[in-house]
Image (cartoon, rainbow over all chains, first blue to last red; front, side):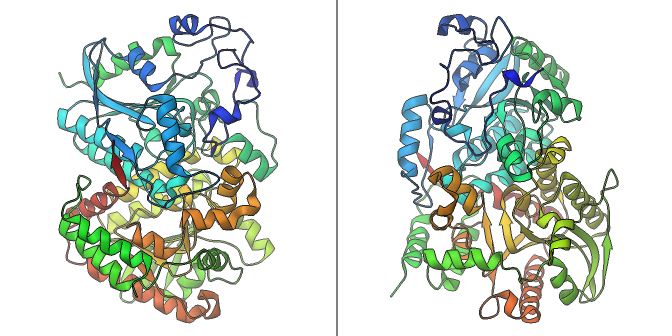
Length: 282
Length: 312
């Protein structure tokens, strides 16, 4: 795959709306320039029919794409971020949170719940990049940990779909602590005998890649997804190295042995169902 | 007159009785810990004091891991290589004698002069470094040796090869390895505790921070560049995200602060090492007598409870 279809996302970029300002419309394909109406893209799971570029998917749409109709029961939707540091940069953190909630209709950057995929029971944890760049603060960490516990209690696998710029700076060191928190929760999940299936979507970077997203029993990624600890811009600035065209992309990660498979969006639901059956204890 | 920080802690203490706790938190333990923090806390650091810690944590004469190793351990044998690909000089591992007991050490190592700094990559490890650390952790577990880690890194190295060799996965697996250990584990932040590269080797039963070290999700310059659009606003960023030891203690992220000699650890490395050794010995004593399974359970429960939540 050429670098053409790639949308660079800096690892710390928490504001996709600002980084795309002045750029093409959200429904214009960065791969081939084709433009689509929302309904057209929805019919193809938001994959470009011309060049197979994978457009971003909201957490709600992702859940709908993956689960058996009517099977999803959301859990812990009442949790909201507090502002433990009283964080204020150019704007207060609380204001950014309120704005993100209005824009996405979500309480924070992850949606969790019980679901069935081709009749196989599981728990789901699906991130939404549109909520503050999918950044992980206390709520994302807590909801992921609870999803692990819920999966362990039910004796079913946890399916995680990541999309994140990394840890949420506005929660300072507590955001960093969500890395070990989610890692410890996965240890308990594994000890209970349940599996973690991890799907990486564009982009999965920083603290989420450096914690739960990398710890799946099976790790899958969508084509063209950026999955790097440090983003391409940070690497280029820090090292002055010339980056390979496929730097940090799923294809490169697959070649270097960090992924089990690259799965096009249309095959994700049947692929997860196959894996759920393989991990099933029937 | 009680400081603002003290008032906040008192408030937290009084609220704890009626508060909905995160699952996995033991109320009595939390109360005890807060009371303890309250007793030790003198006053909340100002923006100037936070910035002074940032400067001292990065001071060019600050003692590094190997400076403490030679002062704290009676004997030390360095272990090299990740047994797969390379030996990463930015992260040292080895066997040491702490008084009469053998321990395993894992620590970031910066360089003192330009040549050594380059060799040590300024304390920024590659995935190979974290794999070497995991090898040392497994060794510790196999032989029942306590694990001591020293954290002093601006962050894990952001380079092309580091990404190709799996930097994110290595950091995640190193944390998982620490969450699994049966032996007592002590992490000491002795300088810069920079983000994922730091927490990769800091998931421990007891986390200590030297008085003028910092522990943060991102560097002050990185945060300023993104949120203020200007790296020169690093001072403001540091004041906002509060990477100093007192705030980390207040937020329940670390377990204790280790004092430094007047003016900072670099003023008297011997005295700083003696204080750090005392901190490590005290922490090990606290962990003594716990069954390995219980120690591991408490370690995971501690991290499970980290974070602050609200409800809609």
